[in-house]
Image 1 (cartoon, rainbow, N blue to C red):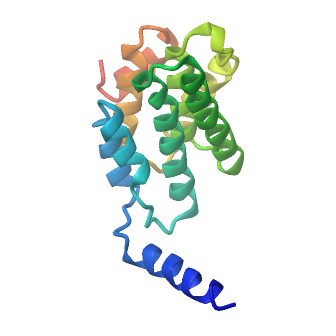
Image 2: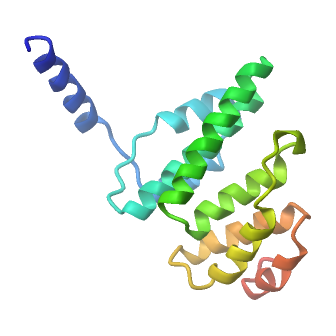
Image 3: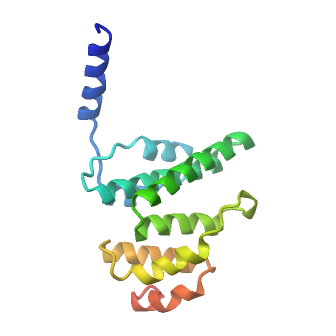
Length: 170
C-alpha cells in the first residue's frame, strides 16, 4: 500500500500537468509529420478533447501515425510491427465511432500501402461511405476540402471528382 499510493499520485499528477490538445491541433499537427522525431512528438501529445467522437478520431490520427512510423525504421520486423499496431488501433477506432474522418484515414492508408500488406479490402466501401456522408458530416468545411483534395491527389478515386468540384477543390 505504501508503494501504491505514491505511484497513484505520480500517475494522476502527470496526467493533470500535461497540456492536452484538441482535434483541430491534431489535424494541423498530423500534416507536419515529416520524420521519426516529429512522428514521436505527435504520438506523445496528450488529448484534452472531451468530445467522445473527437477523442476517437484523435486516436485514429495516432493510429495512422503509428503506421507511418514504419517509414522511418529500417528493420523489416519493426516496420511490420509499427504498421500492425497502427492498423489494429485504427480498426478499433472505427468500430468505436464510424465517422467520415476515421474512414478517410483508413482509406488514405489503404490507397498508399503496398498490396502485400493485405490492407486494401475496404477501399470501395470506404469511398462509398465518404461520398454518402461527407456533406452531412459535422466536420469543418476546411477539413472536408482537405479530405477531398487528398483523395483526388491520389489519382485513384475518380468517383470523388463531382463532390470535389462542389467543394471547389478542383
